[in-house]
Image (cartoon, rainbow, N blue to C red; front, side, top):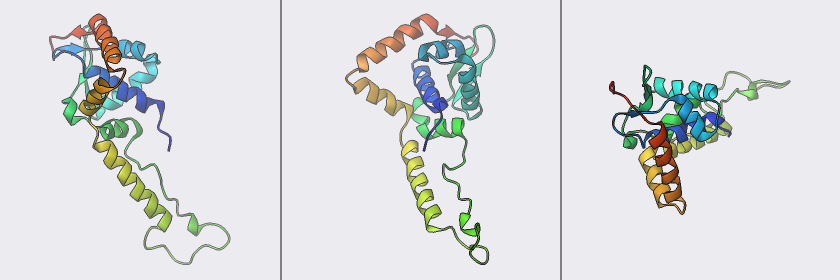
Amino acid sequence: MKLSDGVEQAIHCVTLLAGLSEDGVLPAAALAEFHGVSTSYLLKHLQALSAAGVVRTVPGPRGGYRLAKAVNDITLLDIVLAVEGPEPAFRCNEIRQRGPNPLPGKPTRPCGIASAMLKAERAYRAELKSVTIADLARETSESDRGDAIAARGCAFLDLHERKSPST
């Protein structure tokens, strides 16, 4: 399974937004700059995160993005589904019914292959649902590079965070 680059970008953006002050926002251009990605490509994913209720937009010249929920309430599954959509990675096209010798009649249940793939999908989604942005922040701070990662993010937020009166 291959997820789009947008998933990685979205997860990193959400983790950076988690470091904002209570009334802080970051513009999309700053998020793109911090991660070295295209602003226009990132905007598409920020809009998807906004539509899914993961982030919210604050309009206006002092506006930008901020989290819409607490870090304990945002899971990796929330972000993946926002960016990639709700469809499962594997979609059975019932190829047993194709070719020169299809099975007679309409299948009454999924084949073993589809069942195994859907079971794996459920496990994958359950694991993504069990990891919150708070968990990621905690793991990062405990990593061997945690201090350097935190310092980099804090220095960037000090320069680019906007205070918004409308939060």
